[in-house]
Image 1 (cartoon, rainbow, N blue to C red):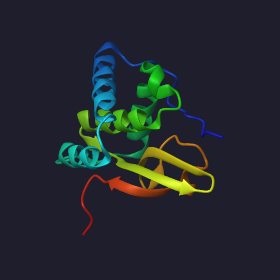
Image 2 (spheres, rainbow, N blue to C red):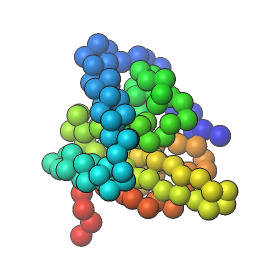
Image 3 (cartoon, rainbow, N blue to C red):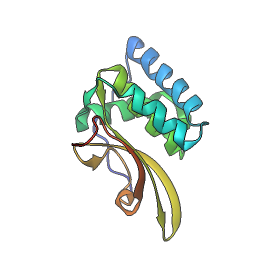
Length: 139
């Protein structure tokens, strides 16, 4: 079951809509790349960004799923990439994650902020993150 998103229910403004569509288009292109390239690109894009708050990341995720039917559906990779890219366009960066679980087998991509998954189903903690791109490298 998914968490209920409380983002005020508003649709993005025209200026925001353009930013969201740009993030979604970039995410769709990036999602076609191999994991190594995705990680490298995100590692460069995140530079100079401050860590995103949970509310910032949730708002970005909501806007991405409002504007894109692809991202609103079951396609977690473009949704998570678009959310991270939209946050970056606004000066912040959530932790982007991609992982797997073994029983039942599944793969998933998501973003985290303030050490928790943003707007994700309750079973997200059952995935083991294989790739993480945080706002800043650890100490």
